[in-house]
Length: 460
Image (cartoon, rainbow, N blue to C red; front, side, top):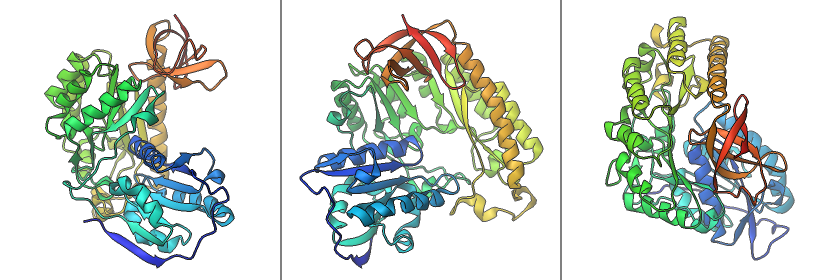
């Protein structure tokens, strides 16, 4: 059952300066696409209760900080942000709430530590947000208990809120059962719970009806989906919807890259040729300590099957540098894997000791769990990223002179420019008016310039 921790009644707050029929909310989001999706759902839920989003915190009656705990210093980043928002509470009575993974990990401790935070809630309670905002007028509280899988309510996207957007996130599942030794996610997002397939497909259908052309199915370990069918079948059911032109998904675990999923990439053109497949390390001993249930050879076997099924697919990955016990030989194995796979891009980080994880419990307990000095880990990360920058630049440069299909997402950074993405998930900027390139249009663009992280081109 949900866990409610109350710190008692709160003193009356000053009325917000612009109190009226509609109140205003500002959301500060840290972290992954799951958090971005959760923040969108928060705004949509509050919109149904007469709240309007604003882009500046000083204009907000409610400030929501949606947090991430995957990397170190997450708590310090949160406290720094809250310190900036304290003045808005003093000036206009702004309500301040903390959501997401740090909220789930810290629970009522955060309320005791930061007395001007009004309430704290974990990811399982997102659907209750409007009611929690009302309750915050009476008491300070933390709501961070886990929902039973039978009780869990997946927040649904509001199609009307998505009208005019080209892309949308759709939650397929939440949580993770893998318990990798470096990862805090099972402790902040809970066990895996899959959303019923019919509900996922219906949400995608309703989004397509208001003009959304691309849906991204999301979950902490989305390809382990078991909502009445396997994930490959879910992809095919969404692809059958009229109006859905593109399908993406994130994020994945290599052991769930099934033959059926490979076949979906081979057979279904609406499934975009881009796959994020985290490897974490190129060393088998390190992978074993990470509790990743594959070897480098096993990962590459899956990798090669995917390339054979969808030639030219852009595969991205994750690496951790400086995991406990990582030797120079282990690190060089990661560099060799990166060079061999020629990943389109990778997200790489220095190892972050996270509470409640197996690696933290064993850190320093034996030579193979020795802590890697910070300066060594940082130097290794910089070397790895230098190789990746070169590979990514070469991947983008290979598109020069080619025609690519771009899904227009909106205005570019400069006036008179638009932006969008290719099937391979490369960002493209091109000169065009909104009338000629409205959001949601699929347009041919000739690539004329390749930068370090994006392409530029001309409409054909």
